[in-house]
Length: 110
Length: 114
Image 1 (tube, rainbow over the protein chains, first blue to last red):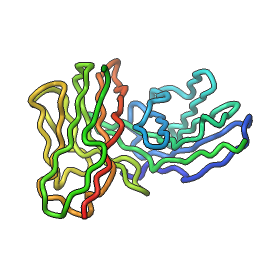
Image 2 (cartoon, rainbow over the protein chains, first blue to last red; image 1 turned 45 degrees about the horizontal axis):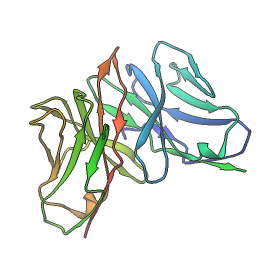
Image 3 (cartoon, chains in turn red, blue; image 1 turned 90 degrees about the horizontal axis):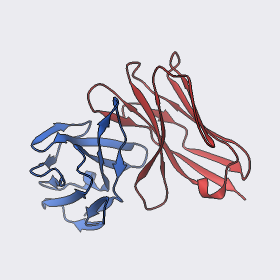
Image 4 (spheres, each protein chain N blue to C red; image 1 turned 45 degrees about the vertical axis):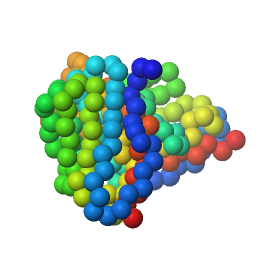
């Protein structure tokens, strides 16, 4: 909602890296989040980054934040078939308002 | 079982009927949220609650009513359902810790309004 944008689809081969991109709108957003949704399930928090950081690494996941361009990315190293899912970025704005992107459907080809 | 549950998981109702979606969490989290998920829109926040008896509007509150008399429950009511409210509804709970929310989501309720 409120113009948090993501590309809709991404296909990668198993073992390659995946990069999912997101642009957000509010420069005052304090935290930015990545969630994963598997078919028929709710969202699961993968990782988050504080707005004064440029990068955060968590095992196979790397989050990059370009605050000037309001651009957030999630890199998944050594992508596996179990990583196939929809990935959402989200920003938290003032108060407790959360705005999610439209989601990127990642397909991993064996 | 511990966690966050939603009921019913599937619901079909007719235009104009009142329907209530239930959400229950066992963590005693202060915050609870209701979202709807629609193709092309991602998730949009309907209402949230910071504590029992404290609720606030989100991005798309029109046509919905919430209450929070107990910390663990956060029901969402559609007072007079419309076809545009056909959606998948997700409830979430969180604690506000070190300036951020780690939200835990329920499995969702798929609502169809005919």
